[in-house]
Image (tube, rainbow, N blue to C red):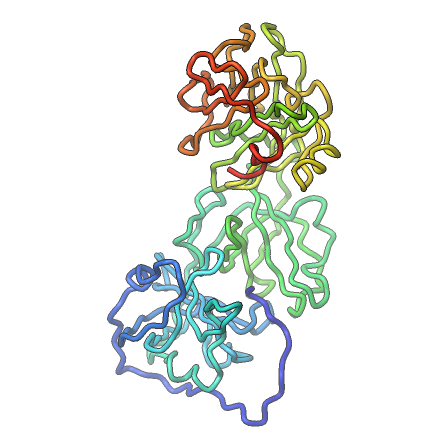
Length: 440
């Protein structure tokens, strides 16, 4: 984790050398170092040197035992997190300082989407990048004699965030704290705390705050504006970490109170289930293949029963958020679902809903603007004996499909049933063993 709190007074503590160094020459780029990672933590044995710029600061206590460096003071292309067992590192490595990092002897790895350099620790026999001891910091991180640089954050937007920007300084415009959180403090005392920000298009991003920071008890800003922060990542979720309160400038009026509606063709139906042995264990699963959370305000999930040309059940998905690269599982019976699969569904819709199909119905996903984003089956055609029958079985989207389709295309699906007509598979499916709700 980024924040590990606590301190031990060490009478033998020795500050690292802070005199500048003009003798070192970088012989590798950040990208070249990243290419050394092949899935496991390694120790670097070559005499490699990189140069970069300090973009984080622990002066306000929102960073702890880490330095974040990027490869350029303007228009960075990559960044690293360096784990160090050094308090008040801002006194030695100021924001904007150019530094050289000797990589020989350091450990290098990637954890939850973040590239890290540092020392090492072992957990359950596995190596992980840990803090570099304070006495060793000065042997690896050297200040350049260049003057402090004026860091220019990369101005971007939530939809355009990508892995290359992690550990670099970015700026997002037109952000505001979610309405339900704007009267909260930045963090709970002594707890790492996530608050949530949105842009005026409904995009969401997390603000990660330390419960030990100087501003933890400050009320979050209620306006709209820009946030300058180091971009972090927790698996599929991007996070912002500010250095001080000055990184948030929100003097403007909040986004219009009118509803913000979003669409995306990367949200689609990924699995529909009608278990042979338990009709109460039915479900329907949606998947978001995009890199952005989407609030499904104005979206509808429709069920067309048998050969009907008008929908018999419509579910308004407003208020529901589907995370990036994640699923949403809808069940007609949450109690039975948990009893069968061992965990609860995301949403309970009730009987006769789109989640309660008996295998010969047609399902449609519609965005807020009335556009069909995805469809299963052919409206007006009873599914029995067709290529879209999944009675006593399931319809599972093939893993290579990453967008919805407004026209049912059989080749995008693997379909199991109790008849096997039209190249479907005659193999009834039983719950729980033949199903994987929530897993894409």
